[in-house]
Length: 191
Ligand code: IMP
Image 1: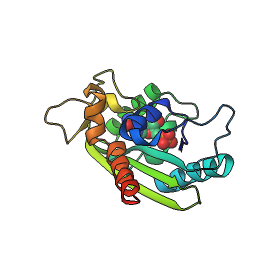
Image 2 (image 1 turned 30 degrees about the vertical axis):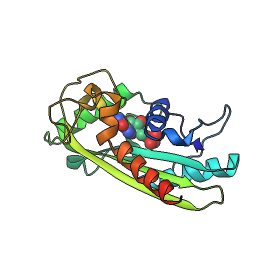
Image 3 (image 1 turned 60 degrees about the vertical axis):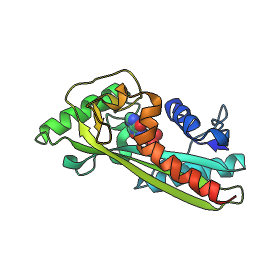
């Protein structure tokens, strides 16, 4: 099955989460579609449909991001480009810290992940999950990617950020881990 992403961190996490699926990356030269949907679900479906149409076979896509409760859900679907086109993880994270401070410093946030699966025959399925937590003012830890260094999930017993968790600990509670388990249950249920 193709995983329609150019984000190698996502590919690594999804391979660990779904070892039975033999997820393949997009081939060299693949032209990714424009993600102009207005929701995580719409963008995940755009990516999975495009990969299915171009390459044939089953295609899976992840659209994900982080929503600040005090910024009306921003950056949300714009998480990867929050600091502008071609933005780095560093730039995006710094912008989120600035915006949250400017808005009065409310720290609640949630990661969201939507997985879209287009089967061999074109049938579509969507799986959505979240992971709530709060944003620190300073980065901590070296693991994960994106906004992980400032995100402390509610579902850990201590105050570690996502970046301070082991990959297995992150996968056990993350938005992507939860969505992947919904997908795995669906696939298992198909027999
Ligand atoms: P997408 O590739 O359009 O789905 O954008 C996803 C963006 O959301 C990433 O580039 C990160 O900025 C953020 N994001 C999604 N999942 C995670 C995660 O597990 N950790 C940290 N950042 C994430």
